[in-house]
Image (cartoon, rainbow, N blue to C red; front, side, top):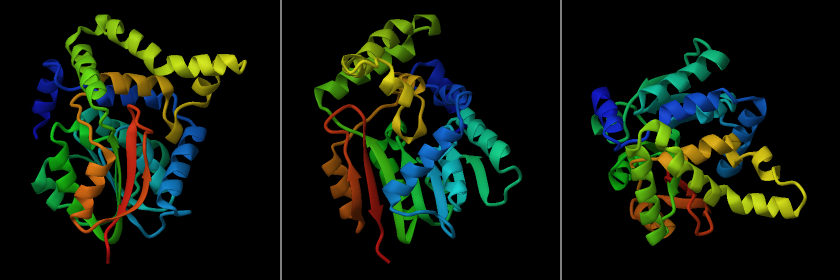
Length: 276
């Protein structure tokens, strides 16, 4: 998929500019967020470190989790379809691991089978909140499975299918991306109230209305950038967790861990392993 395709998709309102959002996130990135990202990898993978492991970050976004994996000892290969996301990941490599031969950053697409076929196989294939933004979720799920080495793990996060609610959110995202920048607040404002209002009220009743916001989103992410990413995120697809589990079970993968969104609008997280 050519870089010119990416720009055309954004201009036509068919794709959110994820990389621009990630660039703003890097302005608030600090050691505490990086440590939370590392812990989330350790917890989901059930491993204290990734020393001696090859880690593939499919859709690296800000580069935070590539950085976390590298700090945990893995050799890392990162790629993203969005050129600005690639630049964000390169920036984190420059800040924390300059000229590191064990961290490669490049542009690529989870829908480009020829590109993926040249990557080899990895001990951990990681794609958190990415494949549902490709415009071809099930093809992307198919494409990443051969990248997992025997005995390796596939760590995915895919939007939960809420039925009619997911259809409604798709319409919200389409409207957001079609509006001129100054008018996007007309969508973002009500969505922000919908997404954060319940937490604000709950925290207010406990005497600390900013507690959840101050503690931030799990995995080291930034609450505001997370809202913008959710509201703007096109393309957009979703899947019921059992559909993902059944799909990979048919390919011989074993489910090791599942963390659901509790039926909400977020991501279901899956860790699968490929038998040796």
